[in-house]
Image (cartoon, rainbow, N blue to C red):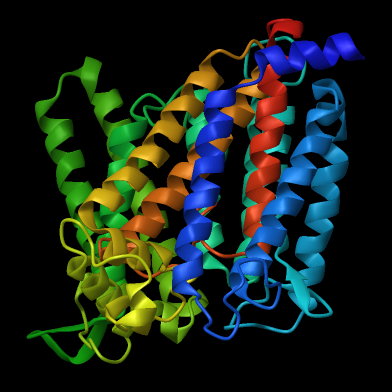
Length: 468
């Protein structure tokens, strides 16, 4: 036992541990200013948000110490059970009382937990468990469908809670799947061959993942912009054509023109390949337009649609619907190069003091106003160093289970970091996503702590694992 502990300590990644602890402490200092209560100035006062945050940090570190004493193989074996428990909680929370329009919290007296935060950890583990099963590196069609069912199933439960922020975070797992050679090709081939009667052996989607991704983002933004609009034509003055229907017509006409030109100008050798790309692109774009339009028009609530419309510039309401983002931008801008000084949100009542959710989703604007560009650069540097370290850890793993889990952690952190900062500086629409180890939140703090300590434990025993 002592020999095993000595081995773990000697292989423990203290660089990653130090970065996480630095973010925790920096976040606590910032939270003390953002949530300062002159009636409860004691840092450890449990009745204040910063006192509760210290409690959550303590619980998270305690859980981390417990995890450090568990063998990594036991963690892997425990993964299916942990995933089932959290999935059960995701179902139970659907019957809870909605808070801010979302059914995401399970209340226990004056406290509550958010199962979706822990679902990030268990889904990352389960994804690693499924991909890492056995010692055969080949990815079978069965395994592809298993991992897609895992991710889409969990995302569906998150979407049913009306938690669109966390729903978006779960798309991070698709990048991890791509890293391991898992793409949507089997589903596309099944659709083309079984439903359309074609005989394709492969598609170009998996190979050209990045261009396809940018195409999806581009068409999604275009669809969001035009989905709710109405258009009339001089030859049909009495009929208003919905924007999404007009996009479908445009894509159909473009598809036919490209197909006809390909049929006339291409050689027989390249004609089939080009036509297959056109067909897949057309079907994919129509499905994407339909899915995005349906989600925007039928799934999103009015305040969520307003956030997207404000971001796209379709509407303007700086002191109303766009108040949060407008105040956050003003707070970040007022920080200047060196900031206005610590606790100025309390002493001088500047911009960030008027931003709702300044302790959680908009915690960065408080920090940026007080510490300015220099302080913001330090925070970005810490998160960038953290992400680089996570990639290094992922690449040095000998087992596929540990590697997939490490990349999952890296992508989850990247999503949270990029979306939260982007939201605070106006680059992205307002979405309820906390900044890891920085924003206030018990479930997030405990979940991220558990997530990182599991990774640290797996990494510390990497030399004892056979390569897979």
